[in-house]
Length: 152
Image (tube, rainbow, N blue to C red; front, side, top):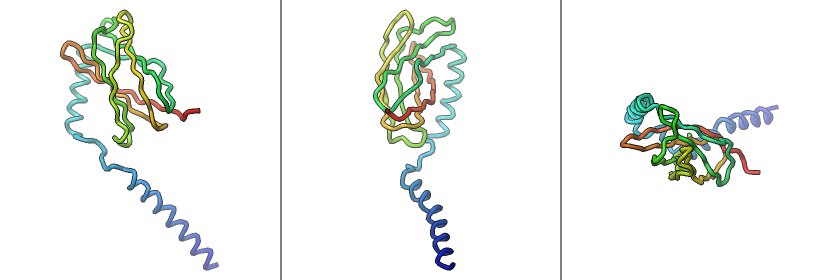
């Protein structure tokens, strides 16, 4: 009976210690860089979105671990395509900045205001997409969280 109790205790302690060791080894320690400045930027972006009335639409938000084309449209306050904009896309994992990558979107069709880029998700799970739309001295950030499923 004593051996059984020792085995149960060892199992219980290892069940608590192993996740702590794995978590500590995989966490880079950064929750948010420059949190105060990011809060101010968030307020500024929110006001800019309200002022300009710009909105963004992401097409086909089903992603897999692999290379994929991302397609978006950007519209002005009147609902007209926002042509001639410069758009950058930053992909990142919510839990680490080790896989952050930046892409440039190119205009596909000036009439529809569509922009496209080839992107890649090296791991499955949740990813944050941050689209920075720049035109006429304005920079507006649109955030989307997507899930990249395992490749089949």
